[in-house]
Each structure stands twice: as C-alpha cells, then as structure tokens.
Image 1 (tube, rainbow, N blue to C red):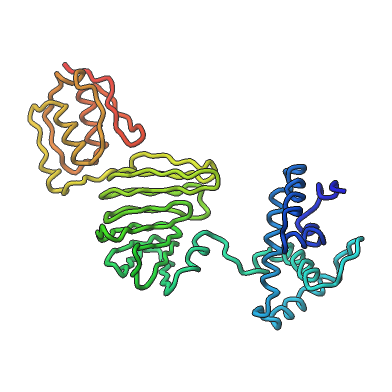
Image 2 (image 1 turned 90 degrees about the vertical axis):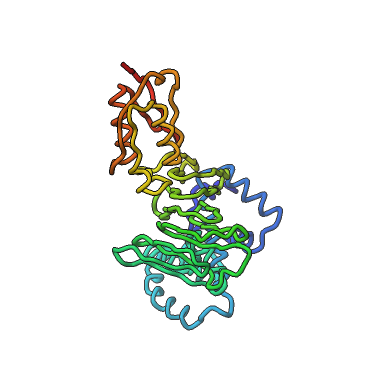
Length: 353
C-alpha cells in the first residue's frame, strides 16, 4: 500500500486524502505513518515537508480574511489551463482544497509557487515581520548610504542592502536586522547591548565598530571587527557555534558546511591613531621590539622565536605602508618568512648576521 508514495510528486501529495488530513490535523498515528514513509523513501523526505507546508499555506489562505474576489480572478485566469490538464484516474472530492491544490500545480509550472501564497521567504522577512513600529532603510543606489539609528549609532549601508529596526529602540536591547552588508559604528551603552541579526549570524556588542556581510544568495557570511570586541553566534540546523573577535579579526560562516572559520581581515588597520603609528622609528633596535610594537599597534598577536631573533637588530621607520608591507620589509632584512595562521601572524626561519 505504501509503494505508491515512492514515486509521488509534490502535486500527488497535495491531492492525497490521507496526506491532506494529516497535514491539517496531525496526530500520533499520522506522524508515525509519514515518518515511516520518509524512512522507507529518503528521497521523498523533502518533498513531504514541502507538500505539508503547501497545504498549511493553502489552509491559511482559505480563511475569511482572504480576498475571495481576488481568488476568483486568479481562478478565472488559470481555469483555461486547467481544462487542458489530464484528469487523474482516481476520484477526489470537489472541495475548496482540491481546487486549490490543482491551482497550485498550474501555478508551480507557470510562475512558481511563490506567486500563490505570500509567506515569509527569508530569515530577514520572518524576523522583521514581528517588529513593532518598524523602520526599514534600503540602499538601492551605487553609493554607500548613511543611516543614523535612534540610539545615536551610525550604519553605513552597502549597495543592495537593507536594515530594519524599531523606531524607538526603547527595550532592554538595541536590535537591528540586516540583509546584505553594512559597517556599524555603535554608540557605547553597557546597560543596553547592541545586536545585529544577519541570516544565521547574531553579532552582540556594547560599543564598537565592525562590518557584517550576509547576502542570502551567498554561501559565506562574515563579520569583521574594526575596533573593540564582539561576540558572534552562528545558529544552524545541526549545531550552534560562537566566537569572540578582537580588532582586525574576522569570522566567516560557511552555510553549506555549517562551519565557522576565524582569521585576520584582508587589510589590518592600526588600533592606535595613524599619526602615532607614523612616528614609529627604530634605530638599530632589536627585531623583537619591533614585532612587539607592531603587535600592540594593530592588536594582532605576532608569534616568533625570541631566541632565534635575539641577535637581530634593525633600523626602520613606518610611513604609509600596510602591516603586511612592513612585515615583508622586516622579514626580507632578517631572511625570514611570515604567515597568517588563523588570527595570528607567525614568523619563521630568521637568519641574523
């Protein structure tokens, strides 16, 4: 009796009496039966879930609040196509759900099921739909867009991105919802944490600056810290992971693998004023002193063998070079190599004359 479900399509499931009854009014027996079907035919597990959600959405549309006139117009538009469809061999009752199911089959092939029901399609849509007094800002230009939040924080919104937040932000937490990419310069308020929800990532801070990138069509979402520190949580179906980031650190979340990976940003920036960094001058100074100074200036741990560089001395100054350019000059002088490993920089094989 269950063999037929092996080849069922989505359209078959949403026209099956037993399946419709279970989807609308689940019970222990029905749960056990359809779990058994999913176990027998694993390739049908996702189809069963989609079919059940489709029936629930159709049931929602059948409520009195649904615009019956609009439904009639939709039906009139597709009824011609319905006449051309082959009639299934098995009989079925002429109820509203039957007609709706048949309409879904047509719309799936013509425009896709999203044109039939208006349900939230993304985490961003689901979350922002629950905010009271919501305000949304969208950047549809090619330039960056500056958005000032009610708490005094500032958001630089990248092209094709959007954020939503409460107009008042008068709760115990300051919450912002992001789809896309934005740089946040958060006003410090230890008594009122600031949270950014972006896809699977939740970034929590008190007051700092950082960038979040989470485009829903991309496999990788990321958070990059400019100043201060933030905690980032990635909540995925199989596991939840969290990390704490410091300046010039970033974390990437790979959606398909549900994996977090920490590292350094592409172009680390000093955590001290640029003018102060530019005054760094080393005259026949121990290389260990130079490494330690750079580590403090950029907030990045530089790992090296103190004994191996004990005899290394160098005369150098910092001008407009980037951190990696500075390290390249130093390593060339002492015949060493540097490598970025996770959120650290490692110096290897120094040779001092």
